[in-house]
Amino acid sequence: MTKKVAVAILLSWMLSLLFSDGKALGASAFVAGAASVNITPVGAAVRVPLGGYAARKGALAMGVHDPVFARALVLGSGGQLVAIVSVDLCFLPSGIVQAVAQDLRQMRLVELTGSHLFLAATHTHSAPDPLAMDPANTFTQPKGWSCFNPQLLRWTAYHIALAVKQAYENRVPALLGYTSTEVEGLNRNRRDDPVLDRQLTVLRVVRRKDLRSIAELVVFASHPTIYTAKMLEISADWPGVMEQAIEKRYGGVCLFLNGAEGDAAPPDSRGLTEEQAVEQYGKAMAAAVLRLIPTIVYDVPVPVKAWQTSVILPRRQPNGLYLAAAGSLGISIPDAQNRVRQLMPSTTTISFVCIHRLLLIGMPCEPTGALGVALRREAEEKGYHRVAIVALVNDWLAYALTAKQYQHGGYEAGMSFYGPQLGDVLERAVSRGLSQERNSSAEQ
Image (cartoon, rainbow, N blue to C red; front, side, top):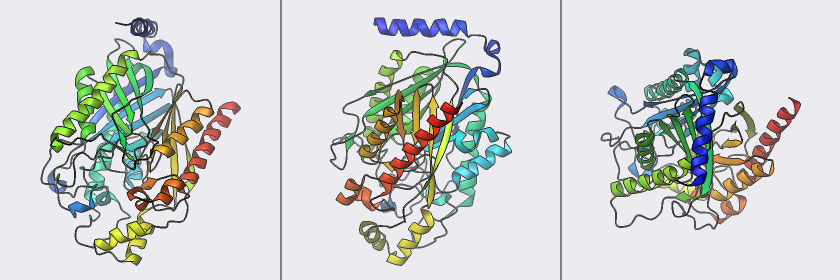
């Protein structure tokens, strides 16, 4: 055991003894609770299309390879609580945040809605298709298009809310710590862009009483696309393997949040079957996390802050690559343009959660590494100690690139629906949101 690790353990233990009686801290006590709920459809909803690949042509799931979950962490002190939720979906369909919030209000948890709900998709490409949960999706053609299934939306939203409720009910006095590091060899830039977000961030929450794990939260940028369109069973892909390995080691709930993954992919896995590659990569990610955890120093954090900033998005303008792809499916250009107008929002929000000196910036899109690194730099220059960019939070805009990347083209540009200025608009909104919090803190 290194001297640094020994000191971290000793400090954590001393703090746990000092604050072991949560009642002594009254309403200001820092508390945390976690839970995981299986969101795999059952019964009448089980035959659902899988999201992630148009090449599946709307094929229904043939079974469940491994279940998909909503994993929730509720933490904070007094009335300042936030729910961080990791959901095994490709993205968040329009309306699901509102549906989850409605269920939370019915569960009398209104304080965990709005800016206090940080809902993120892991981006697995083998979970039920989010388009089938999108009330804005009124399209029924062509054959193979995933039609809206209100039963599936209700099922999924309720079970996400149930995970939050159980996490809320599981709250106990807690200690928290976090760290981050750059790691090599665990992701690659699939656009061959020289900029790649390699930051691995790990936050851990433990019980004050005995230092037992409550939750581990992992942020890293990498597409869960090891399973290809040939996979016709529901799966969480490699994040599920990673989460299960960490949960088995520590006994808490492990939540994966994807980072600036717009152009980040797992390393090449030639020579392995898809299942072997998923297992190998998931365990490699778990090993990287497990190496970091012993270096974490635990503390009683200041109150958690959560806020959002609204964004008016640029005019929706699908480019030629998207229109050509739609045409290959039998969708006319006017129809393709109409789908973008109907399914892509005109406004959105960027979500922020500040835990001690760790800032999570929740982007409603898939930011590329170059955009993510620029956003992190912006926050660090404003004084935040650790910054993690989280993709696919509380909305879905598809891809967000820098103007230069958009002009360069490629798949990601084809799946970016707001023209070359989207990255700049989002970057300015993040800067405005950071200033908004700083000004608010100064006034207090």
